[in-house]
Image 1 (tube, rainbow, N blue to C red):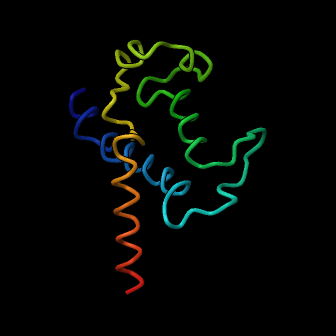
Image 2: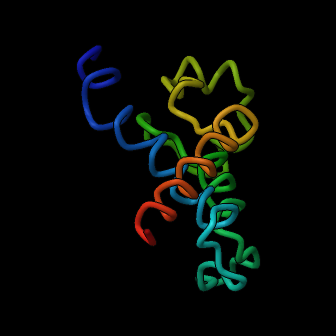
Amino acid sequence: MALLLFLSGIPLAEKPTQQKYFLMSHGPDKTAEGLQPWHEQRETDPWERMKAFRARTSILVPLPNGVYRRLPKWVKTVLFDFPFYNFDEAKDGTKAIREAEDKKNRDNA
């Protein structure tokens, strides 16, 4: 279980994927239209859609979205949804934007 939680693709994929969606909304290459809406989704901002997805979807334990969304944070932690899997826009956002701008400037130089 420890291999799955800490050394598998979960920690390596979750936070960078969330960072990608954050930069799609707030980074130097953000677009006004964002992602195309899918089915009944009204929210077109990629970062808001990713946050909504993460709030209702368990990383490891398969549960219905409606059930998982209503669980308190401590229960989600018991179900192995640890805080270090999540991109924190307040803590990590400024650094991610700065790195994306630096990368864009290097690519344009």
